[in-house]
Image 1 (cartoon, rainbow, N blue to C red):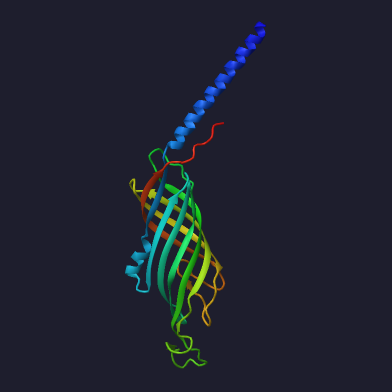
Image 2: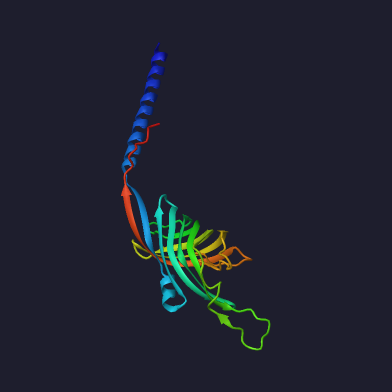
Length: 245
């Protein structure tokens, strides 16, 4: 009889201990669920494009960049921009102009020390452009070379093509350095792979805003940006309290 009471006492103590631990765990989880979750939205510009626009008469460009921190090391990222580029090649002169958008994600590989908030990241984007191509002039094909080959700015091929659209993938490697608690300076390198590239009639799609130069022999390209961004942290509380185990 005493043995039964002893076992009953032990079982009761174990049950009480389990119940107490479960209650404490639920209270801890409840408190954690009430803690605000901090997110960070960074927005800014690509510094390279407006600087180039000031020194290059054949180029005008602007790009707005941004990313949203959704987890400890994961960001949703996007770039929106416009470009106008006049190219004077050996046989023709043409102007490409239009807008583009790139959207994707970044993964921060850098383990920050306490108090630091720098990024060394890899990422991917899907880019899409809407643009036009305008042929300004071209060399006239002739069979003799007694005189210089003439250029013409009139004829059936001269003028603007219909609105075009191209799509590509970008593989991104970059870094962002925290200048202070709000400002970040960054640079990224991009390897591009063209996916869709419809050609205008009687003219090749030789330059795509956001992608850069396009050739028939190669669907790959490269680009970079040099950014200054401003961070806007914000918080909200979880509405759902996790269930106790």
